[in-house]
Length: 115
Length: 113
Image 1 (spheres, rainbow over the protein chains, first blue to last red):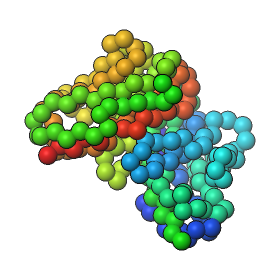
Image 2: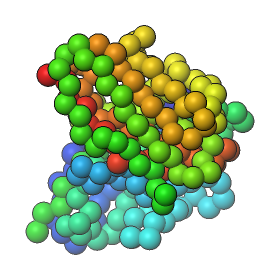
Image 3: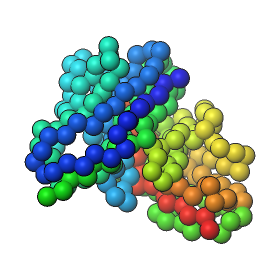
Image 4: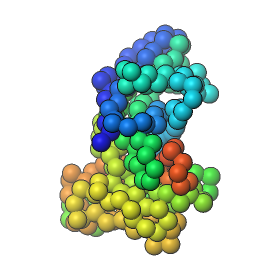
């Protein structure tokens, strides 16, 4: 079965600084990878996803993530964060096998952006 | 509707009470999922429906948890004889069949006193 590890439970950073949120996964088969963001008292919103093709994927608000198969990683990066990026970020994996495959989440990383 | 909706948004129950949580998926989405998110944790899978068929309920923590989707649209997650450890946010998600991405609702925050 697949699993996801987010080693950093909390990442404090100053506004306009770069940030990287780490995500490693484990699976015996090929996977789809996702980052979801959860703002306070809200549901999960899809930030970006890797399904196939280019290993570098981007979101509309400046985040990017790179799928690294050899390192089984899908780290999330942003070159310059804003106060409004403060939220909980969840990495998730789903096996590509046909039929039902559940989405498995990591424990989340809280990004705290301060002025 | 435009997105997945859930009701109620907040529910406080006394230990031992039964609760029912409702999910309205995105129109046309055949697949529906329930997840449980404990405080400070990532969402944990509970159960999956394809139309009205419950194809996987391996994540339901006990036989006090029951989910249904009788007409293949709205789904209800019922918890009988609630316990304090049931306190969590219950998230519903939907998707088209075969589509990898899930769309989540805002969740129902259940507090059991």
